[in-house]
Length: 287
Image 1 (tube, rainbow, N blue to C red):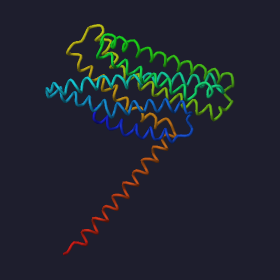
Image 2 (cartoon, rainbow, N blue to C red; image 1 turned 45 degrees about the vertical axis):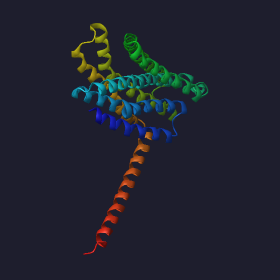
Image 3 (cartoon, rainbow, N blue to C red; image 1 turned 90 degrees about the vertical axis):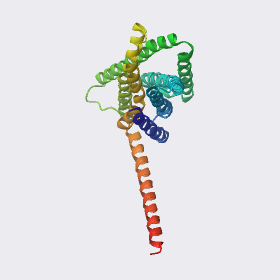
Image 4 (cartoon, rainbow, N blue to C red; image 1 turned 30 degrees about the vertical axis):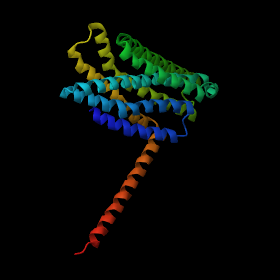
C-alpha cells in the first residue's frame, strides 16, 4: 500500500506544484502556503515512504543494519515533513480568517515576505522537533501529544469563526442579496481548505491514538501494528491532498487536465513515430 501511495504522492504533487505555479487567480501568499503543503507531501512520497517500505522489508527479512538505517531516517524525515504539513494547515486556516476580517487591508498586511518567513520558521521548527527523536524521545513524544491536538483545535476554532462571520454577513445582507464574485471565490476556497483539514484529522487520528497509548501504557510489542497502521495513514495523506486540490479548485483542476492531455498527446505521438520507424525498418529488411 505504501508503494502505491508513494507513486501517487510523487506524481500528483508534481502536477499540483506546476498547476499552482501557473494558476493566476490565487493570491501569492495563499499560493506560497499551498506550495509548501504540496512540497512537504511530495517529500513524503519521494523520500519517506520508500524508506518506510525498505524499513518494513528489512524488518520482515531480519536485516538489522538496513532496518536501523531506514527506520531512523524514515521516522525523522517523516516527522519533519508531517510537522510541516499540519503546521502549514494551521497557518492556512488563519490566513483564510484574516482574509475575511481584514478585507481590503489583507493584501498589505499578509505579504509574501511575511508568509515566506513564517513558512521558513515552520520548516526549521519541524526539523528541530523531528531531531528530538534521536536526542530525547520523551520530549519528542510529549510535543507530539500536545502540539498535534492544539493545531487541530486551533484550526477547528478558526473555521468555526469563519462560518459564524459568513453567517452573520448573510443575515445582515439578507437572503435576496446576491454574493459578489470575490465572496463566492472566498467561500469556495474556505470549503476546499476545510476538506483538507478534515482529511488531515482523519488520517492523523490513528497515529495520535498510538502516541497517547504509548504515553499512558508504555511501548509494547503488540502496539507495533498500530504504529505501522498509523504511519501508513499519515503518509497516505500526502496522496489524498492533491486529489482534494483537483476536486475543489476549478483552475487547478483545469490546469492538471491540460497537463495530462498534453502528456497523453505527446506519448501518443511518440509511440506512433516509433511504430512507423519500426515498420519502415521491417519493410527495408531483405526478403
